[in-house]
Image (cartoon, rainbow, N blue to C red; front, side, top):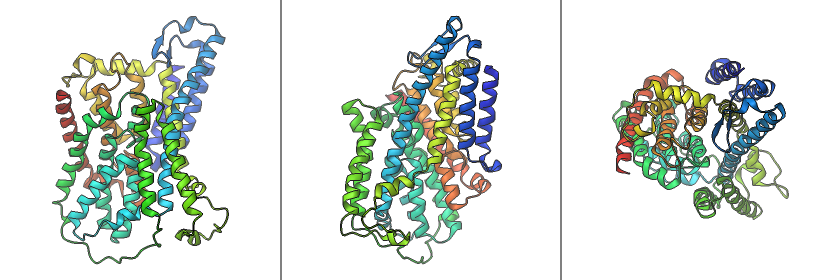
Length: 467
């Protein structure tokens, strides 16, 4: 039965990886393999000899001796435990996405566009690289990529020029998301699972992540694509700016940034702080929308907003639910493998087979090469299931909270995905927005991402010897 469950997972994983070839949204195989995996566990519960107790984070070797009813009860408790942990991540993401959509509703990101005045291609590259790096740390790399490419589309009309900027934005956004607990889904997962803390994440990863962005950007600035100035672009506003756009931008970003502070002070899960931030931002959004200010896109969308319009409802309707359902499916599918103790067996085998390359990690029995392979793997397949798997692979005895292993995993999974355009959420959304060809990215951008990834990894190995 275990072999069948692993087979279901592998087939589902393959379907997710080949999403663009199969023309099937990745949320479908994720949900199907989650449901089938748990169904097979329920049907074959009496055949399993061991079980992983998520609450105690330990294997129960006497599981096979329990009565059928006790086994079913333990399975239900485990399923509920994993659903709760997954829901924490999903509710957190829903809150962050809604805040960003509220900012966009008030045209808040146009404030950022107003700061960009240069026509130099090289200078514009550096501006967007630093914007992507720091913005992704605040509003996550996926959202930062969407925002910056939207601004790019207003600044640069030539697509052949624009996709070069988009490629470097992907690298910078993924690098920026790695050192912030709210910058990348995988880092958020590690943070919520109490594997990393905000302070240590910054100390360990800021410099490696910065180098991961700086080195490719520096090399790219000498490429022919970034020589000279932009041709005279037709500057025109798509719609009038709201007089509240700047206010909502700073209020929304401030709300998201306050979440780690709220968690540190109250010790409550991050999603509670995110819901508070969303509530505060929503209050101001409702007040502003009911003032004399008329939203520019109200008329453009042909809707009657008088009297009953809610910017919060509008923002919620724009949330990308397929991504939320994908995370639900993949995280719960990985939880099924964890519950059977399969991930721990895989981790043990992996550590035994791989040569020890690290220094600080030797005493923990975890090779640096294993973590670097996670980074390379995240470029080929989605980094979310890889990090979800790592959470079940390494026990607290091997790697307690804020151990350098978790920070290296956060770096590798967060930045490794830049090596292929399908390797990260930022890459996938850029691919969709700009219709970037997979092989164009592979030839033009992948080598830059690889150089940045390796330089950052070396910097991390040096940084951990200091701290």
